[in-house]
Image 1: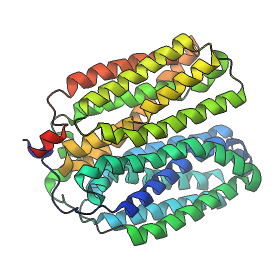
Image 2: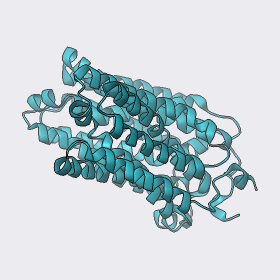
Image 3: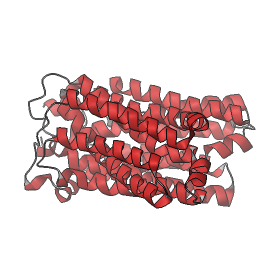
Length: 401
C-alpha cells in the first residue's frame, strides 16, 4: 500500500460527538452568514446607502477570501494545536457578524465580510481533518454527514428566516441575533473541543506536497464536474420553475424548500452506503442527478412533476460533499488538511464557474438551457469518476490491507 493511503495514526479511540455537533452548528452559521445578504439585499442597501449590486458583491468577496484561506490554513497553522485555531476562527465569526450589525457604511461591512471569508475558508479547509481527529476512522463518514448536515440546514432555513426576521427586527437585528448564537456556540466549543495537536509539521505536509499526491488532481477534476454541474442549474432553477413549470411564488418556495430538505436527507443517509468504497457511489450519485434533470426537462411542464424531479435531484445533490470529503480522508489521511484545503478550493471554484456557465446559457438560450447543460456535465462526471478513480484505494478493505 502506498504511503498516502495508510490508516490514520492511532490516537482517536473515543468519539468526541459533542465537539462534532458544535462544529456542525458553526458550519450552519457560516453558511447562514454567507447567504444572509441575498435575503436582506434591499434593506441592507438602503441602510448602508449603497447599491444593491455592491451589497451583493459582499457574497463574492467572502467566497474569494474563503478560497485563498482554504489553501493557506493548513500550511500556515500546521504546527499549531487545532483546538485554539478553531476557537479563533469561531471567534472571528462572532466579530464579523457584530461588525456587520453595527457597520456605519458599506466599506466597513465589506471588511467584516472579508473576515467572514477567512473563517469560512479556515473551517471548511480543516473540516475533513477535524473529523479524523474527533472520531475513530470508522465513524468519519457519520461525522462528516453531521458537519455537512449543518450546512444543509442553513441552506434550507437561512434565506427564509433571514427575510422573515429582517421584516420584524430589521437586517441589523438579524446580524445581532447571529452574533449572539455564534458567541454561545463559541463558549460550547471551549468546553467540548479536545486538544488536537498537529500530526504533520514536516516538509511533506505543505500545499505543494499535497498537489503532488498521486490521484489528487484527478480527483479534484471529478469534484469540479460534480459540484459545477449541479451549480449550473441550482443558481437559476427559479426562473425555470416559474417560466416552464408555471409555478407561482408559493409553489416555487415550496419546491426550493423540498430541494433543501431532500439535500439534508441525502447528507444524512449517504454514510451507510460508503463502507465498501466510494468510486461506485460517486458515479451513481452523479448519474442519478443527471437522470433526474433529464426527467425535469421532459416533465417540467407539470408543476407536480417538476417538484418531484427537483426533490429527487436534491436528495442526490446532498450526498456529494460527504462523499468527496470522505474520499479525501480515506485516500490521504496523513495529508488531510492540505488536501482538504485543495478540495474546498476546487468546490468554491467550480461553484463560481458553474454559476457563470449557467448564467451564460440562460442569457443565450433561455431557462431550459441550464437544465440540459447541468445534466450533460453531471453525466460526464459519472463517466469520469468511473475512469479516473479506477485502482484508487477507496475501500475500507484497501485501508485495512
